[in-house]
Length: 454
Image (cartoon, rainbow, N blue to C red; front, side, top):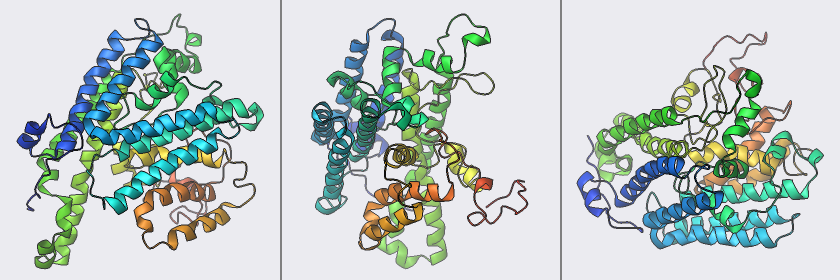
């Protein structure tokens, strides 16, 4: 069994929990992150019960949820949290001063430009020397929120209804947010550290206490014979996610730490071990490392649900759903990709929280919202235009996020021509048998859809 490497007990944030880091032999930055998220879970319950919309006004809820989020960012990242605050402040100034016709363009250039500068500094200045849980993750989430909100404001104030798709019309924002609302949306403690991304209208409805009624109206609740709207409890959903989080934590402490992934590039290990055993260790260490991320993102989902955010109406059996926002679906990631589905029946296909929302984010705002998209160029031509930018640069792998996000929607549109607009929850709900035969060779020409494994 590999010997774990020495643990760096350093952080750009608070050093208050250094004794805990030494006790569990876990890097201090990860301890800070985990403790903040655990504290956020209890704070979310308190927020839902004692600062519910019936007890506190929207302004009080905005202030409290924002101040706690700012404290978490400073505690975890120290002065590096300024990058998050600077980007939010910069884009708020753009939102209040830019014309409606250009607000989405200026916000996108500013947010993505600042994020790119921060990522380039991590590569070329720090040579990836920053910590695993540094500010770049929250900054990417904030960037998605900033650009999404800018496009939604543009849709609500600068475009006619008939120009919008169904989903764009649902998400369109008809008034510019106040400074408090803007900061609350981007810096709230429910999602500042690990997401997930949410739409601005859903978040404001949650703060104002209208989110449950809105979803139940869509479900024709009163037509079912009920006289009033219920107050559904998220306790079961939170409990299920906390159990998953605990299992992932135990796995991390018992297995992941004993199979460090960094051992794959250890010179002594490479020189003294056969290729077969190196391959076996690579397979085990990669699979053993995933629960660490499952822990963080599942706990983030539980925090949002504990605060009352994430209600999504009823399922087919009439039970309450709490999956309006979600980072990932572990079952889909681990099982369905191996058992007959190329793309699982969930928008949470990818094992990374940002990737899970990036395809819908790009398709909704930068593909369907672009007047020059597939109507002027075929998807194949668009892809051929983009690829040289990633092929010519020998270090393009360092920007794999951008390459994946940019090419993904084009490949999707090319493989699955739209027969009608899909919501962002349905975008990735594609069965393997709906693939063209050239893409999926196991689909038969007779249209038989018996279960097969690709």
